[in-house]
Length: 356
Image (cartoon, rainbow, N blue to C red; front, side, top):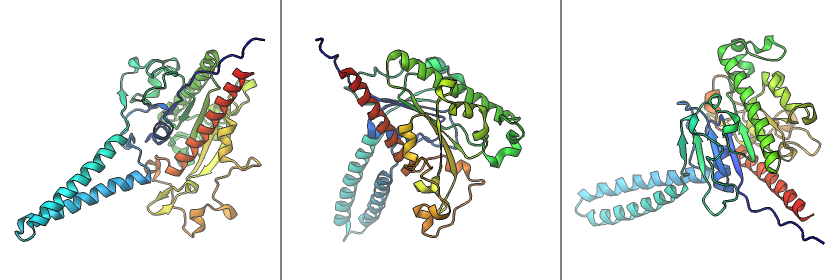
């Protein structure tokens, strides 16, 4: 009897966030789960990409530094008073030491990243080897328009989250783009047509990642795409995502969620912001569904979310979309944990196959 094949070697997970806005999902995967990550988005002066983990605990940490600096300034004001100068010097020294200690911790949190601005410098080897796990995780940010990149230039990823601009498919902008006038929801405007071309590039990336991972013998490729509730549900490329794999589609499951269910607030009030997500892995989609397959995070009628049950009315989205690009921290943690469970399941199946 032949001995069983050895288990697959340890492998680092890879995650990408494309058209990423602030990049919170990628940073969570990078900081908490140790993934090698790539973020791709052309520079946008209205959206600050967060390459620091800005969890509530760390926000509180930065506020503590600011408070200590205020105390230090108050202590420095005592130096001009002869009777209080000695106490002032002691306090200044103490506060300086505490501030230095906290700032050293902040520096350790910073995610070192390399920024690539030239599309010709991008290739599938920009990340270290998958099996090289004895190192710190790597983050590469491509400050490049996705339209400038060919799918074959990108490394292989376990999961990619896409979040193309919501302005083109939202019901609020239908008059500007004319999608409601076409059965396949394509746009008349230049901005809308740019979005349609971007979606074709996203479809090409999904197909390329799927096929290349098959050839490499890696677990199936996983993706999620987020859009506001609107004309995306009738858009030909989103419908193609939902088509069964046997019919040339990607078998994506469409889920709907309301952002207030994950703690989204605007000017002190919960904001509903109905959001759609196409997810091709049932294990990830299940994190957004009830046991009988219904959407689990809808805030309406008798199923209001915890914040809205407290009597707060929803803030209006209209006119505030640019201020709501960043995903709520609760959604970031929820989605990344769902991806982690999917990755772990795939790994167990892989190891089980090796032992059969």
